[in-house]
Length: 289
Image (tube, rainbow, N blue to C red; front, side, top):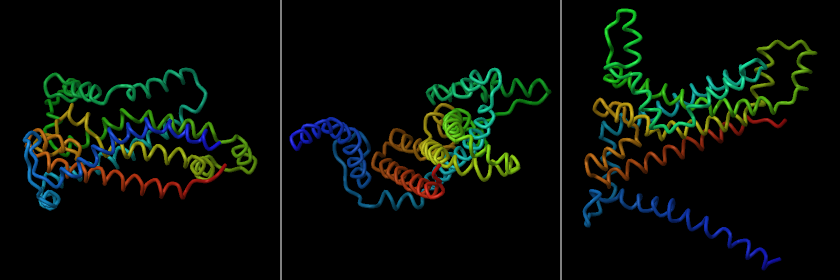
C-alpha cells in the first residue's frame, strides 16, 4: 500500500511543476520587482526598498483606480446577483420559450470580455453610436457618453453586469431546483404568504448558491480589465482606470515596471482579502437541507 501511495503521489508532480512555473515563480518575481526601479527593458535596476509603496500613498491616479476597482467589484456584484436572482426566479417557472430565454441571458458569458467591450463601444460611440441614434429620434443632441469619468465608470459597471449576469442566473437556478418541494408544500398547508416563503425558505436555502455567485462576481469585478481597455482605455485621463489597467498603463506607458509590480501586488492582496472576508461571512449564514 505504501508503494502504491508513493506511485500515486507522482501524479501530483506535473500539477506542482506547472503551478510553480506559471503561478508561484511569477508571483515571487513580481514581489521582488516591486522593490526595484526597473523600467521593464533595461538589464540593470536598483533596489529602492518600499519607496514604490510609499509613492502610492500620494499618487492620486492610484487612489482613483483603487476607488474605481471597488466600484467595479462591489457594484457589479450587487447588480449581477439581484438581476441573476430575479431572472432565476422567473425562469424557474414553466412557460413556452423558457429554454430560449435562458440561452439568450447566458449567451454574453460565452463572449470574450474584449469582444463584448468592442460591441458595446458601438452602442456608446459619439459618432453613429446606437444610443445617440436612439435619442436622436426624439430630437436630442448626441452625447459623448464616455467623455465623463463618472458616467464612464457607471457604464463599465453596467456592461460588466450585463455580460456576466448569466453566471448568477445559472447558479441560482441550480440552487432553486435543489430545494426539496416538501418545504413549500408544508408552507402552503400552514398558509405562508409568498413573501414569507421567499424570506424564510428560499433565501436561506439559496445561501450556498449566493456564496458562490457573490465570490465569482466579486473577483471578476475587482480584476476588471478587458472591457475597460475596449471601451475607454482608462480615459478620459485616468478617470476610469482600475488597478489592473493601471498596471498596464504604468508598465508600458510610463516604463516603470517596478512601480507597476507594486500596484499589481496591492491589487492581488485587495482581491484576496475581500474575497476571503465575503466567503467567511456568507458561509456562516449557510444552512443544511
